[in-house]
Image 1 (tube, rainbow, N blue to C red):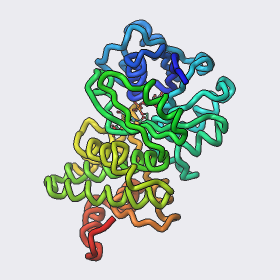
Image 2 (image 1 turned 180 degrees about the vertical axis):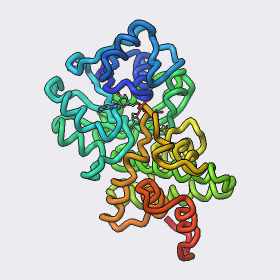
Image 3 (image 1 turned 120 degrees about the horizontal axis):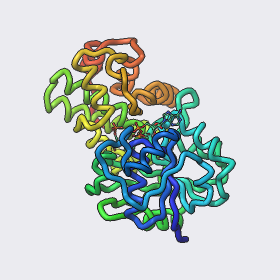
Image 4 (image 1 turned 120 degrees about the vertical axis):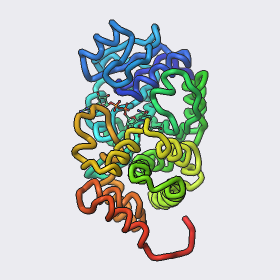
Length: 332
Ligand SMILES: NC(=O)C1=CN([C@@H]2O[C@H](COP(=O)(O)OP(=O)(O)OC[C@H]3O[C@@H](n4cnc5c(N)ncnc54)[C@H](O)[C@@H]3O)[C@@H](O)[C@H]2O)C=CC1
Ligand SMILES: O=C(CO)COP(=O)(O)O
């Protein structure tokens, strides 16, 4: 299996950064943006000023607004916000070539259906071999070539190995896994938990609270992932713990910075006002909450964040609720 050409769907910050990685990996790469104007600007300025300002884009990178142009690619990376994955893949379906692997790079759970991106893929492109790419990776850092390591999950070992070789690039080191559900659960949950860490930071609750939140957040991430059919070992890797630590530790994270604003007293509307970029934790929180309830899994931190975002409680209510839970044995 050899892949020479890559098509990246979605020219937000992460799609753009991954397109840079593909070029660095030696792939002939086309980045698709839904905004025609952005395509023209990127062609003219070699920069994505809308979603990833200040990063010079590789000379070899090609741009298009037309999904049909990706129909010839050997591998597809799907990077729209999770809530738009279904519509995006449905629009791509007429151009999809059977057998071409689709690497899902978005982090979230679909609202309403509570489905993971692999399930959305199976319903929109039923014949597409799936992989999930997820891990600690801020677009701004990766696009500049700063190093990181991520999880690449694929159920088919041979395809997984081929994708691993295809997508590894200087400074970008994927590790192979077979557990797609675990990889997806980690990426979706860490965004909700990062909002909680941001709130703690905004309220100046201290480093101890921060560490306690990450640790108990990891416990609930593991519980939910396992109940969904994933493996605890996967969640303990880059796509779970790794990404949780990153996202909870830096205001570079859109999710953590949303929490910071809430902790500092802004309303949800104020904190999101004028934002062009997506905070997936905000988008996925209701679905994560519903999923956990359906599976009978306790996720008190994420549940509290979902309740706060839904306007059911305020920040004090969230903190009091977490600190007044019954005392119990420490376990996952
Ligand atoms: N930014 C980052 O550092 C990372 C982001 N991700 C994930 O990548 C996914 C995409 O995030 P970003 O690239 O950061 O997005 P972004 O926040 O930079 O940009 C928003 C994107 O949403 C697209 N969009 C808006 N409305 C749309 C619609 N109706 N249909 C389809 N697309 C629409 C825009 O065209 C744009 O590409 C998310 O799931 C995110 O969690 C994963 C790893 C790192
Ligand atoms: O997923 C990310 C880093 O791995 C990006 O996090 P944010 O979406 O919170 O910015």
